[in-house]
Length: 357
Image 1 (tube, rainbow, N blue to C red):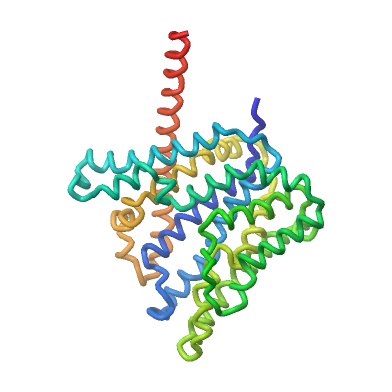
Image 2: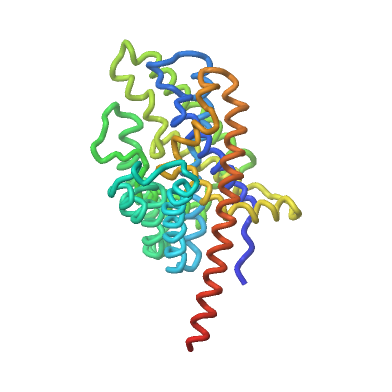
């Protein structure tokens, strides 16, 4: 019998997906406009909200590393992930064709290749990076268990020097920097999460220290970016720091994510209906991402929900919350249906296999 999922971590999974939808609303909806284009109070507010949400992707990966380091690796899980991604990649254009939202003339051969091979074409960059992380997880987990604590610390520090330290302090765009949108950064996060699982962090385990670290890093991130955006017009070198803190492998973003992760790790939710509901909903959250980030949908849902009507107005705040709820609930519903279809398909396949035997 599989172990019961921990409701505090499942709640973090849900919160992280809310944050990811908020990020897409702000960035792809152009609500958080570049500093050079807008210096309004509304734009500053949008960037502040983004600062508190930018940690979400790192938190998602930290959750995976935290559990994968001590769990049994199952190749079936990788196949399940692949089929889930493929389902959305093909089902979304099929549904849109079926209801007349698009026509076959709107899509060429390259589009269909992308739908058929979503991992290889990075249709969903997160799914591609995460699948590679999962494939390497048993090797990483075995290596972590073999290493001594101090050796693992050194490995993590060296990786951070490569991925994060240089870009955080030096106004230089490194050729190798993919801003955290790759499996190399995900592996680094895996090792950090594994370290926290095996050895913990005494300071972050003190009451509210994780929450304060998260809030402090996000505020610092916003201040650095806002100041650089303001001063960058006169001092060109500072313009680099205007948007760079809002990348996943920036140290401020990383420490903020670790702080939020540890805050939820310390959280204890009372068993009851709410905890049960959280555990029930959380497994469907990845489907929320796959639905609203499909290449045919990722910009269109902003038009469907009229993001442009509240852009540059403080009404964007309640409108954003409403959009997050709509997108989240739609994604949960669709993935519930997908899960039901997959389960029914598995039962039919097993019955057919048994009858043939």
